[in-house]
Image 1 (spheres, rainbow, N blue to C red):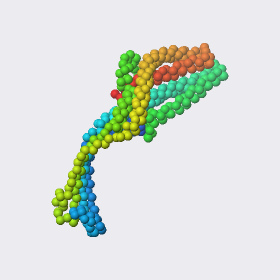
Image 2 (image 1 turned 90 degrees about the horizontal axis):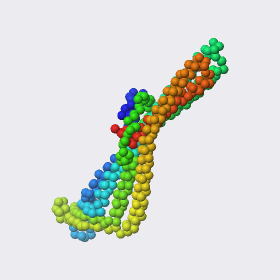
Image 3 (image 1 turned 135 degrees about the vertical axis):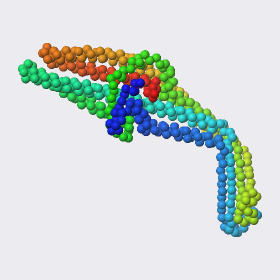
Image 4 (image 1 turned 180 degrees about the vertical axis):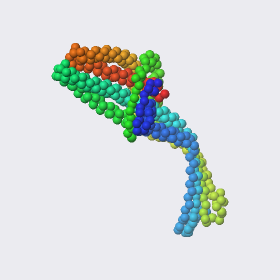
Length: 427
């Protein structure tokens, strides 16, 4: 696996993290990722509540009161001026037996929303993963550039020292050393600039991995990263599209909106429910004991209730029109996402092949420039070329080294982008 060759040292915590570990740590610490995961948990809890709506609603009520002054004696129905205590007991049950299967549709909607949120989380994490990979590779490229520039700077300083000895011996003109010193100053400035860029990239990587805590990190990459197996990859583009989180999210948005449209239509469907009500009471003025009073005074009622919406159809029409327009817009958005992802996959497949060829071409050019540079060094010692000509050969060699580093970065990035579309970074 490509990820196995990456390693990242965390000095402060004294442990080594692979690129995969860095990605997982970012998923764990990212606030937006946590929010989506919380929404998933909330949606599951809401789904369980929907199942409870299939059960009857049962409510009990107990009331104990003291009456003073003129009050009605419920045993005789007469008004009396006295003080007495009364208790009433009520048990009410109600159950919806038909509402157009609205509860069942809402449970299905919760399940669809759960899948939608998972695609949303996957799509967000894909973007976060690519940010980490891109930053990681930029650090590697910049550090390699810094190493090359540092070697060049030290080499120039050594040349200045050797040249100065020849000047002291009268073998070289003193004015020519100014050209070498100018090259040294230029190399030093480039090294300072690259070092600044590396610090900024490390800061960005740290923010992606652990936004709430600073970690001292150092990346490292072995030199055998090139994976030629991707040059002949024949994975069907459609199979990649079927697993793409962004495209699946666009499709799921349509499905959720269509289900919501069906639920909105149920606003004009009559609701049928059954109910039952049990009442009893007791009082201290009665000659009967507590149990006998409850048995003697109880009453029960039951029936069927039908709620028929009258004006809901007119009021709901605008909502349905809006929902239809939303579905049409989501379908267009899905087409746009599908085209974008398909184009990205095709471009990345082309980039892998072309960047590989470009890398090999630039490596060959570097070998030629290196031979020219070695020959130029020898000729400079022998006085066969001027310092100006030597510096031009040296500059060509330095630029060839940096161009190879950039080509490696572009090739590695194309591979990792493709692996992300293949969803293989998670394995």
